[in-house]
Amino acid sequence: MPGLRCTSEAMIAQPFPASAWTRSKPPLLRFLDACLNEFSAETAGHVADYIPELSKADPAHFGISLATLDGHVYEVGDSRVPFTIQSMSKPFVFALALDLLGANKVESAIGVEPSGDPFNSIRLNAENHPFNPMVNAGAIACTGLIHASKGEEAFEQIRLALSRFAGRDLAFDEAVYTSESQTGDRNRAIGYLLKTNAVISDNVAGVLDVYFRQCAVLVTARDIAVMAATLANRGVNPVTGEQVLTPYAISRTLSVMTSSGMYDYAGEWIYRIGIPAKSGVGGGILAALPARLGLGSYSPKLDKHGNSLRGIKVCEALSSHYDLHMLNRSDDARNAVIADYDIGKSPSRRVRRQQERDILAAHEHAVRVIELVGVLSLSAVDYVTRRLAGQPRPQIVVFDLHRVTSTTRAGARLIAEAFEELAALDVTVVISGVRRASREWDSLREWTAELKNVRDFYLLDTAIEWAEDQIVYRYGGSIDFHETTELSEQPLLDGLDAEELTDLASICAVRTYQSGAKILSTGDPADVLFFLRSGAVHVTLPDGVRLATLTAGMAFGEMALIETTRSADVFADMAATAFEVQLKDFERFRRQHPRASERIMRNLAQLLADRLIVANTKVDILTST
Ligand code: GLN
Image (tube, rainbow, N blue to C red; front, top):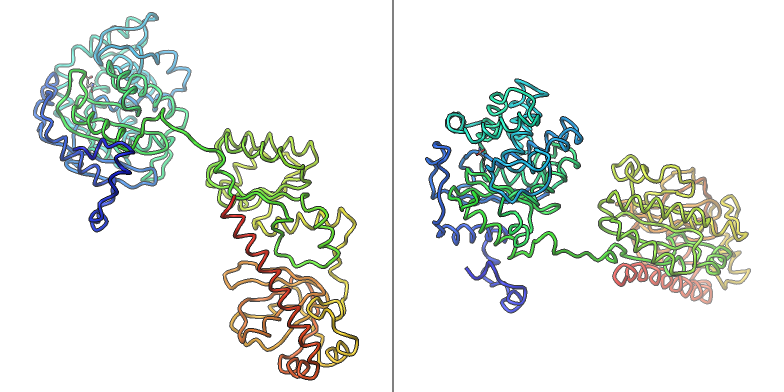
């Protein structure tokens, strides 16, 4: 099937067939179907028969399953046919031993070098230890360590661990176990060799019994896919969400799978396919691509190395078709910055008075805002720190982490180091977009807890507003919320003469609102104009998005001049007073004072234009960085 191995050029030359859109199958499922169809024709190889019971397997059986790290499982063919796990148990038992007994104990008994030998080789390394835990000698040693510590309980512990990887209770095949137990003298020989070399302490028969049982645990291609996906997901089963074993045990297991998982074919495997994998003589292949997916396949006919022939083909096709070789990767850290601006380019939504505006305009580079997205990795954070260093030094930096999905440990460490450096330079750091008591918050705090220069606000706009206030204070401005303003200070009434203002004042009522009071509601008739006399209010959309914060000297509800119902809510942020004028009175005033009316409408147009410019800049910043 040429489609499986097409190069990227071919993909461009042949656009996706239109008819494909009408088919309901997701592309990955169709890919697995195509593999199943194409590789069913492959009939070479032999079903393992050195364990007599295995020779009864149906050579026609062929199942493939792929599990994604968001917990979706694709399956085609005989993906629910049970077969014995055999050597695919080895990585899981090794990982279990690392967590159960401690890395020191396991790592001092079993090596991690590829042997270049077949799986059942009776050869130890120069220290008389097994080469690695993926060949029988290493796996038997591993089971021996668990047996020495857990005794009778050893097999049940192993079965339960395998079950947690699969996300369901796994049974075992009595007939295959008995069959291997009656014929497995080669493995017994390995066991005694390990005992004379003190790798196994005692009771070779007991250890072998557990080993034969663990190899006879029944799985399906689907189980193997989920188990592989758990390995690919730092030990978290993506279907059940359970952290099965530690990331240390999982990463070390994937390491030995990479170097030795396919026995004396391991070098070739990692060279060509580039995905950590493990095979079993029962016909299974497990492939775990870290951070991407888990694949399980079942087809009993094996090649001379004891690896399933069709399974190898499936892995080859998957790797080449989607270009998944794990060492063929790149990443552009610059994608982590989605926007980078200062308050001159995009201020907060706080409507400010002239004096504050002047201060902020003179110090527009003092507050820098960097909006980040995706995963904060070592390279992403490094890029951000260099980007920051290349510009005039701000006094306050706001990092918005709203769109950040996670932080790697390396990224978090570098963030802490960068914050420390900023503290030394007297730069205040403000974080927005991380909810307190969330997992992200905890992990951030783990690294930045002692840093005094770090503030946080959940909303980016609140963070920017806070930063602006600091700049206003630093440069001599004060924000006096209790100050009382006159109508003459209202930008909307700019240019009105004393007589016009007096007439307007005569039709205004002064009202007082308690902190938190709702002054306007969306959908209400728009029939009053408000001129805020003291205090502060904020304007929000019904879904909670804050549009503006207004302080004394500013108008709200002024859209009544244009609209008939309110399109936002207004709340008092603190005790507030307002001059209020009924729309019908205001219209009468405008008829009596045509010159004032024209000024007011011109002022309104100017205020709306200013708001539009700010809104456009915000959109522009996000689409152009
Ligand atoms: N139980 C088998 C054995 O020890 C497992 C080998 C394998 O799957 N490669 O011989």
